[in-house]
Length: 165
Image (cartoon, rainbow, N blue to C red):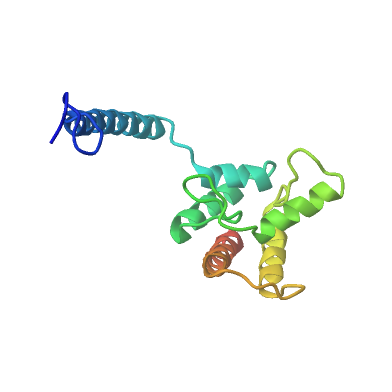
């Protein structure tokens, strides 16, 4: 029983319906915001495979870039472990090479792939070797192990395409 429109729990008796309606309106607003955000993402599509390539091969020739992009599309992964949403899956071997060059004093955009097909093959073989022969055992989560499998597949596909050039 309520007194002066106050229910038995101390809330206004019409409050439940009012709050429910407010939530419905709010969720509709959230849905329209999500739709607007999705449209903005579609209009400004960022190709993270290309962005990853720019981080390791700014001076590489176009045929090396084409091989990178083909391998990335084929495997659905790239040599830096950057997903479609821009997040990194793990620290890849090419990222390790990039960081090593930065520690050696090459700041800005350390060029891992070099300026020729031969240098790109050499860097990819080194990354593949480092991936298959780690210096020390480090326990990894299943997600990281799966990402490293994709990374290995990418390096093999990229290397195959480079050797055909």
